[in-house]
Image 1: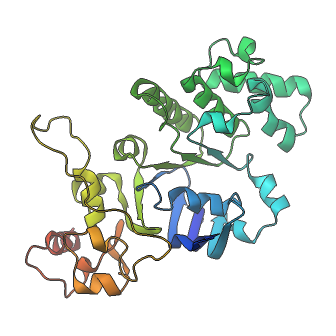
Image 2 (image 1 turned 120 degrees about the horizontal axis):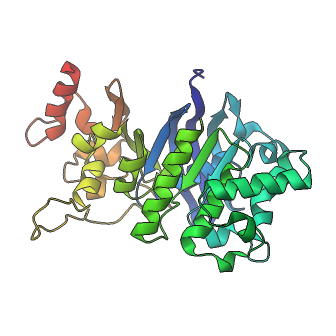
Image 3 (image 1 turned 90 degrees about the vertical axis):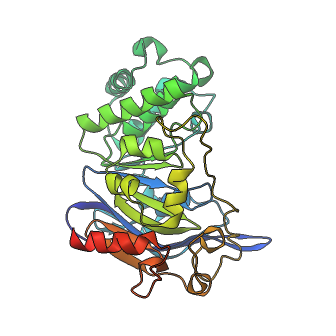
Length: 343
C-alpha cells in the first residue's frame, strides 16, 4: 500500500443473513484515503456507506458477515485482526462519530466519565490527568463551562451539545483516522453548521484523516476534497469534489444533483427526484444496480455489471456509457469522455 494512504478498502463484500435470505449490503467495494485528507462517502440510505466501515472495524450485527476483501489501516489488515487487537485500535487510532448522540451516550453515566473512558482504556494516565484532559477536550469542542458540566448527564444537554460530546469522545485519544457517520443528520440547520465548523477547525488543528459519510451532497461539498458515490452496495463514481459537481460522470450522480435545490434557481422550478426505488439487495440485478432507474440504460446494463473505468487521472465511474462502443446520440457522457482525454 502506498505510504501516503492511511486507510484502504480492497474488494470488500459484506452480507446480512436474514430469514428472507442473504442481503448483499456491500459488493466488491474498493477505495483509499490519503493522510490528512477528508473523503466524502455519499449515497441514499441502504447504499452500503455505513456497513462498509462497520465491517472494517468489526462492529457488524450478529447477522452480518464479511465475505471477502481487506481493510488496510497503515498497511495492517483489520479484517485479519482478532477482536482483542481491534479493541486496541478502536477509540485510540480509529474513532467513529455516529449520527444519533443519544444512542452513542450512556444515559446513566456522566458526560465527563464517558469522554474520559477512552483515556482510561488506552492510556496509563492517572485519574487527575485523565480528568484534566477530558475537560480540555470538552473545551475544545466548545462546551461552555466544561469543568462544571463534566459531572452532568446526557439529558441535561441539548442535541447539539450532545453531538459535541460525541465528537470529544472520538477525538480524546488523538486518532489518526476519524469516521463521521451522518454526524449532523438529526440536528437543525443552525446547529448543523456549528458542528461542521467545529469539525473543520479540529481538522486544521490536527493531522487526522476524516471519512465523512452522508446522504447530503451540500454537506459533503462543504467538508470534503474527494468523494465516493455509492449505490446498491457498490461504488458508482469517485472524483474530486469540484469535478463531481461540475460534470458528474454517472447517471446516478446526475440524478442526485438534480434533486437538490440551488440557491439561485427559479422559484417556480421543480426539483427532479430520481424515479423508482433502490434495488432489492436480497436479489440485486445482475448488471448495473441503477439500471431500473436510469434514463440512459442500454440492454447491456441489465445483464452485465459495468467495469469501474478510469475517466481521468483523478476520477473513475462504473457505467457502460463510458465504453468505446457506447451510442453517441443522446449520450452526454461520450462527449465528456473526449474532454477529459484532452485535459
